[in-house]
Length: 102
Image (spheres, rainbow, N blue to C red):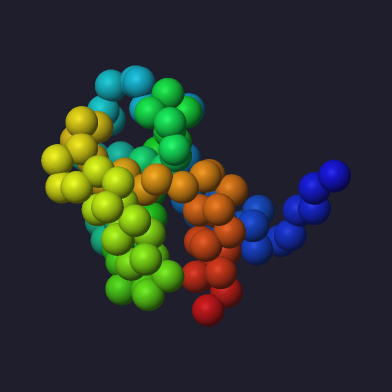
């Protein structure tokens, strides 16, 4: 049984998920608003989700921990060709909810 919190629902709307998986071709840069960046989130290349997040999140210590995890997992030359965070979608949405509440 799961619970839905208003902040999680709000975060999901803010993230603007554009693709259901990473196997689809890369979208044009024009779908990423100014001041934002597209990232992929997931532990498996088949089930990765694409999110568009504000660049200001890159300065947050908790988000920097995820970036360090990504560096350890993939290095700087990931086959996806984009910033990829190796964590579950729900974990990522929880982090974004926390950052939005701060």
